[in-house]
Image 1: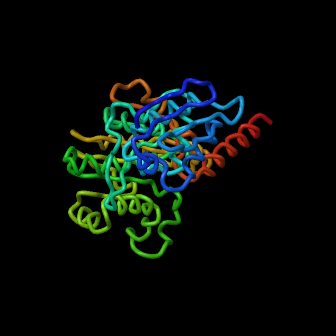
Image 2 (image 1 turned 90 degrees about the vertical axis):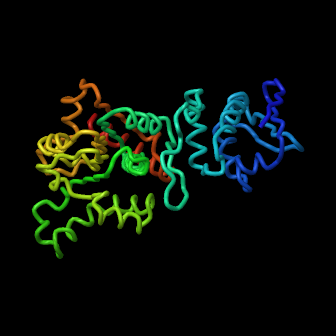
Image 3 (image 1 turned 30 degrees about the vertical axis):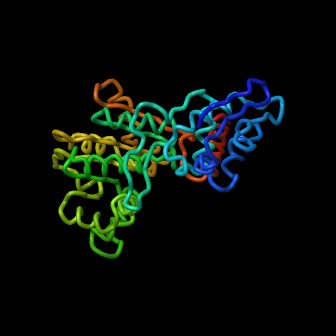
Length: 330
């Protein structure tokens, strides 16, 4: 996309090499263009060979919209962007005046079995991915929908495919079952299945069910409850502990000391959704104080701006935060 800019405050123009550039970036419908217009309060039209940006009001930000589109033109491939993705990128650019997606970091973590690229979709997620790549142990703490577990599993699968590790170990506490686990029907594997199902679902998408089954049978991928980790040492492994807010401090210590040579550990959790019995401390809360100054261990914090689910999820999180703040102030 080459640039030919009219420097008037209320209008700028891009000279387009072809209309296909716009089709690739915005699709055949106008929904994505409307996102840019809404965020920057401008009007975007195509006139012959030009993309024209005009302000719609005194608060319209034509220059900022121009800069955003210039940076966005380097995103590849552009047709992968949904309207939600585009809105998050535009809002982030408006706030920070920086195109985080153009950092000199390999953007695609993994291409799934269904040819869908997995990549960071917010500044917080980009920091998370970079941290996992560089640190031996990473703690990622944030609300639902921020991609904590999904990105960790994508990086684990990528590390396995590039032979950086020889196996993946995915762990979750089955805390919700408590003492009632023995009363559930089936053998132990069937009893813990519901607590591990979200991990299986993500692996099916990334690897395909057949490939996952093959890896699972060979012990290359293991999905297990936290209790199975006691007494083990995991070498040359990518280890992910999910829902870590539901571990006790003792369980967290047990898990972290399973790490062996050549391994990488990612711990994810949401400290606003602790399901432990009343009076029990969360290992994820306590560990932040214990390990905060140890080199090689990093903490990454995501927030509602990093939510990659439906836009309403971000609004729900903010509404709950406001409600809880009011409750505490009473």
